[in-house]
Amino acid sequence: MLGFQPYETFQLLIETGGVDRTNTLLIAACDAYARRGRPTPPEMEQFEALAGRLFPTAGSQAKAKGAAILGRAEMLSPALEQMVVDNIGEDLNSFLAGAAQLSEPTMLEIIVRYDVPAASTIAARPDLSNVVLAKLFQMNSRKVYRALASNTAIVPRGAYLSALARSAQMDHMVAEALAKRNDFDAALLAPAFFDLSDEHRVKVIRAFTQRQTPVSPLNRTIELLTVANQELTRALMKLFSENRRPEVTKLLSQITGLDEVRCGQIAHDVTGASLFVILRAFGCSAYDGLKVLIHATSHDADRSRALADFATLFGNVSPESMAYLMSAWRGEVNLLELNKPEYKPFTETSRRTPSSLAPAHNPVVDQAIEALARIGARRAG
Image 1: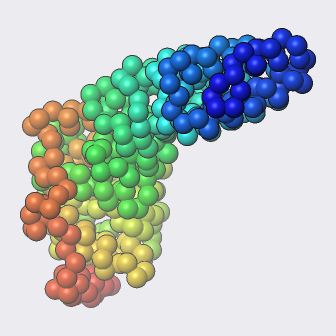
Image 2: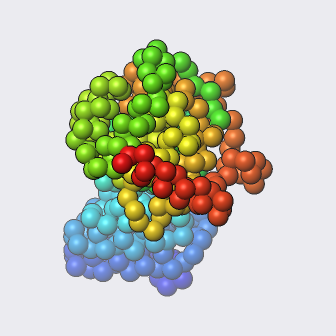
């Protein structure tokens, strides 16, 4: 059989030998099958019968070794897959990750027994059926959801989209994995905003570019304060220029209704992303808002680039949408409403995106920012 021994010879050796011989035969047979390439149906049927005799009587180490060798075969039937899964031991996850093909019954059997490490390995595979996906999404496991969030072969839509968005609110690693994807609406990551990297916080804000949003519960409060936004920006500029961030925390707590811990995060956010949300929500223009951000952000090499990005965002993101983002921080809105047609993003990232919505990185903007910095410094003084 399989190019090196007749099947009858294996049968005779099994019947006349002990465990040691069985161990040797199992490993030799698995190696021969793995080297065979694509076996014919009769060869596969013969090997299934042979392996079915050898695996139950072999020693545990030989079972694991034979299963690991067999797992490298080009083609396995569902029955052979099951033998590998049942006998491979601690190398199971390597097999699940590396197998060129894996049958649906094998995947479901592993998921049903709630083997979380193995299920999370399956969740990272690119060949998952809807039945398998449904079972994986039913698992209450962060490790599984992290793998699902990172799996770009899974299109985030419908119930899968809702499940991933909810998971992102509870697990920052799921949120960060989703933020790295181009096919996931970053606006749905608003509740996880403060768990994201600096780059991905800005990505969340950009997701609201030229976008209609449901009416925010904060709108009325903001309308009452917007008439005094000149005083607000002046006060913030002075506090930031004097590095009085604890007082910024108290001021933000008073005007936003956010708790002091969250306001403290905003006050000490040297990237300026969370502060931008507050400033734009209260109707600040690019001119007034940048004066505050200049004093609030860190003075590193990327400062001009970041401020130029914010200058563009002031023009492309509406106060209403930033008020909605603030409401998401407060847990007052159902972000899945953004999936409704009327709230879908106005533009998608593509070569057709108008240049007016592209990040502004040019000498004119840089000069304007530097001018604002000088004006802001004088007024703050």
